[in-house]
Length: 401
Ligand code: PLP
Image 1 (cartoon, protein in one colour):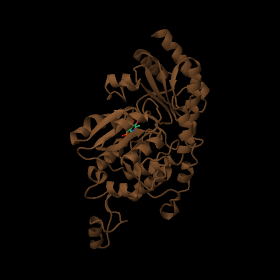
Image 2: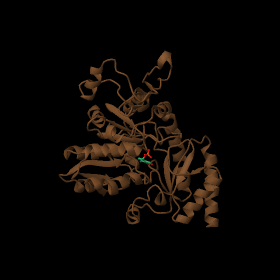
Image 3: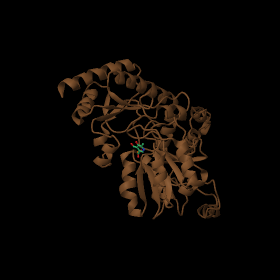
Image 4: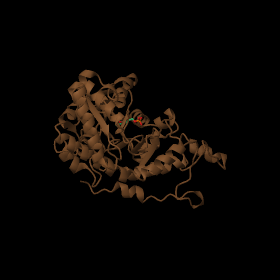
């Protein structure tokens, strides 16, 4: 377990609003005035720093949220984007150019997989997919064209844990950047503390936690975030995935309660995983001793934030999985919906939804079968009550299908 305290770092930030408000004021402006024409020219020439110019570039509200996220990940800087995918695509396009290669984990979010596999080759950027829990596979895939290694700390949907320390040493030895998507495990893991160069989040999930908006973030060195916002050459500036400041302010407020929510999500997921495993179901959950990276989970995680709010139950057949999800929705355990990290339980069968971009053959190879149900457990107060409802649904699945 690490000793880094990301929740305290967030809580220690003090941002007063105008007129002494306890929350920072929201900047409701797309553009900013200059008192002197010369200053504007200096900003465009990159000679003057620290001025607000135009909200696609920077605005004070996005800076407040970015600073809080940089504190959380202990990076020098951060910037926020309009989605997690915008954070990923801006990062990859900033680092790579035609002829470059990426080595990526094979178990990643389906959208990220499709970006790497189908979209980036249009720009001459190709990807080799490997099992990043087996470091020798990563080592073999690296060559002189490899620019970066990409993985998720806790992968979507298989919940595999990648050893960031080992991967970072390998990246450094080969002069590559290590880019880590930490969406499933904010506060639980601190990839930059473990050696990652760039940490990405979909804020849409746990960090915002309310299922009311889509947003993303890139936590990195100041040199990298400055490069992303370079007016002449920055992917974030030129592709334009800016987050609206009203949304930014509401995500910032929700971030302040993230530590309490992550603990509750983790306790609930652990309780259900243990009970359902004892009932004889195959459960994937990094907090269970049966999980192949359970020891790594314990040694790499920060203290007191648990093992995450997601677990996977294997119902073997697609029909069983579908029926179980419909019954859970009827019983008001949660919603049959994609996404995760919400106050309310959300579930989906990743094979036919969020991982459908991955070809069937590759899904089968990594064990991502059609009977899997991914459950993002909500903030239920009485989790035993939820378990009893789930058990009833499972009983019906076995008698009705
Ligand atoms: N990264 C992971 C691990 C995800 O699960 C997702 C979405 O599900 C994303 C990135 C993309 O985030 P967004 O939907 O905010 O673009």
